[in-house]
Length: 162
Image 1 (cartoon, rainbow, N blue to C red):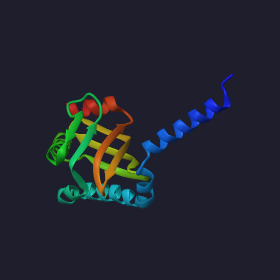
Image 2 (image 1 turned 180 degrees about the vertical axis):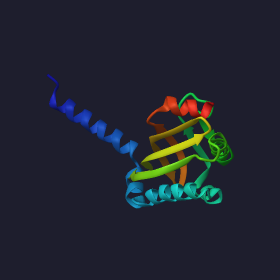
Image 3 (image 1 turned 45 degrees about the horizontal axis):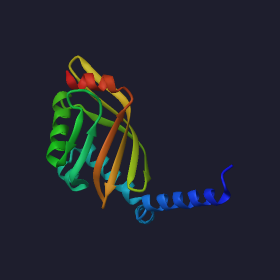
Image 4 (image 1 turned 90 degrees about the horizontal axis):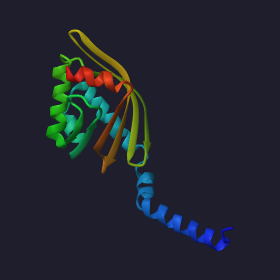
């Protein structure tokens, strides 16, 4: 049997760990509710309009973009130049057809925002059309990091690699 004093001591230690892990984040969550969602919305609006100048004001200069999978375009891209180069490759490999067709609910939790979406791209003899989830980290009002998830990663890898 574990003595009650030991349980209280462990609970106190766990509380200290939790408080330390979230130090400052709780205050940030309270002051940014809705603001990070607006950053994500502005990103999708600018992307849909093809407004790279606007995107450059939404992205942090040192943005980190995690393109999933094992395809030719998969990998981690750092900084505006690398991310915009990736976007250019998407358009080149899709004959200019790559689109985010639908943006679902934009959900935020502190500095993280997630979005369920649908995207598509086509070129002669090939196409993709699928659901995805984007997870974004917002820092000081800028899109700082992006993780992408696709419902059929193998198909996406094939499309971008051909």
